[in-house]
Structure formats: structure tokens, C-alpha cells
Image (cartoon, rainbow, N blue to C red; front, side):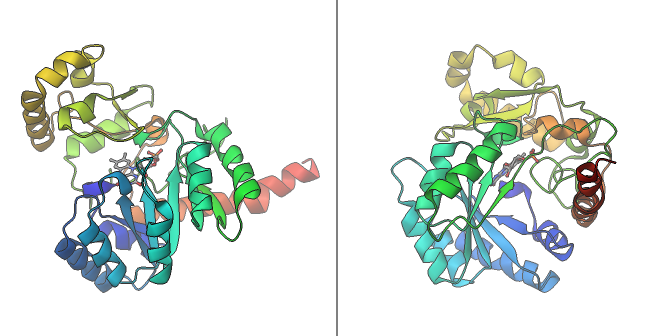
Length: 306
Ligand SMILES: Cc1cc2nc3c(=O)[nH]c(=O)nc-3n(C[C@H](O)[C@H](O)[C@H](O)COP(=O)(O)O)c2cc1C
């Protein structure tokens, strides 16, 4: 989660059996070092370091490799970037490589470049996403991996979930939406509460927060809460470009003061499944328990026709 994450959050996820990820976007090399040392003091379990390739800093990337992490995680490359070079350097440092893809051509590109893991990211997720929903995207990515992988593409996972089936328990999952509520994330309490209060129908895919921040993400839109800030600029992006500096100032101060109408809250449709604020480790434990229940009990019962 970019700069919203912390060593405490990463180690809590890894200690619970998940794969914690340190978002390295925008970090200086010494910050990568410090945060890694802090995570290692808190867990001896594997964790990853996540780089957004379109804006990667070579010095920070090199610093991360020197620390020989278990996993290097990538997303959002520019079309002309050489994925193979990043993946090969990671493999030489002894890391597994994951790549998050929001469409099939991106997944094929990463498989061909030697990624070990492809994460299919659905458009219903929070933050920067593509246009494909995870329900069709995931099996399509599985098929493309079968067709295109040689040695690479070992597992496929999903970053978002399909809708809850009637009668199923509420699910939590360790991705963008479920974890910003955690107390170790640097996010004002009002924003956490807005996620808990949401029924999932109040998000919008737009360029608005990125135009305000002055950042161009290749091929991405951002899903965020449809609040007053978004509604003010929707359809008036031309005016937002003109007023960008003032809009950014407004966003920064709203983030600090916890103004959920004037701040930008990157959040997905699965906020409709989030009803409480458990510690991050418990989020991971719940997911594992629910998956086990489905695999051990519900699926066999379904197959047996009970
Ligand atoms: C606040 C926020 C920050 C994010 N930052 C990153 C990031 O730094 N790197 C990344 O690969 N994905 C990032 N994502 C995308 C998530 O990895 C994930 O794809 C998305 O949130 C979908 O999962 P969800 O349905 O749980 O939100 C971010 C998402 C959110 C909401």
C-alpha cells in the first residue's frame, strides 16, 4: 500500500502466515534499509518488497536487492520497460518474483519475462486498477499462463474476491482495502471508519486524485470513495488540471484533518464486506480459516451432493 504501510503491518501479516509486503514506492535507499531492518526485528518469516515500475528509483531498487528479500513484487510497468531485466536481477539475488496484472496482455508479458507468480488484479479493487473484473480475469490469466509459461508462472493468485455468496460468512482479505483500517496504517481514524461504514456502492473509477497529485500512472485509473471532492471534479477534469496546485493543497490538509468529504480515499467495492477493524494478523487468520472451511468441508459436501 505504497507509503500507507509500515514495518509493523508487514511483520504482523507475515507472522500470521501471510506474505507481508513493504511498499517501496517513493522510498529512499536508506528508508528501504531502515524499514527492512525494523521488519526483520519483528519477524523471521518471509516478506516482500513492492515496486511500482513506472516510477521505480534505481538506487532504492538496488538497495532492496542487496538486502536479499524472499520476494520482489512488481506492478504497473511502462510499455517500454524491460521487465526481464528487473526479474533477472531479482532472481540473481535469490528472490521469487511476483507481478500484478490487471489484464491478460500484461500477464502474458510478465510470464514471458520470467515472473514466478502472477497476481490478477480486478477493477473492483481499491486504488489503481485496470478495467477487467476479477471474476473473468482470474481464469483468463490462468489460461494464459498455461499457454505462455515455460519455467515461469508458478502460481496464480487474486488480489480481489468475487461477491459474497448468500449465507456465506463475511470475508476479509489482506489487500489494499482490508488493511488500511488496521491501526498500524498511517491513516486518520475518520477514513478507517468511512471504510467500515461503506456498503461498497460508493466508489468511483477516475483520474481525479491522480490529476490533483500531478502523477500520471500508465494505463491506470484509481478507484476511490465517491465523496464531495470527486463529485466536484467529475466531468470537469480540464478545470482540475488548471487548479491542480490548490486542489493538492486541499487534499493534503483534508488527509491530515480527517475530512472524508474533501480527502481522497483509495478504496474498493469490497468495503461492503468490511464490518470491523481486527488486527492485521487476525485478518490473515480469518482468510486461512475460511479457505480451509471451503476446501475441507463445503466443496467435498458439494461434490458429494449433500
Ligand atoms: C491505499 C492503497 C494503496 C495501494 N498501493 C499499492 C502499491 O503500492 N503497490 C501495489 O502493487 N498495489 C497497491 N495497491 C493495490 C492493491 O495491491 C490491490 O490490488 C487492490 O487494493 C485490490 O485489492 P482490494 O480489493 O483489497 O482493495 C494499493 C491499494 C490501495 C487501496
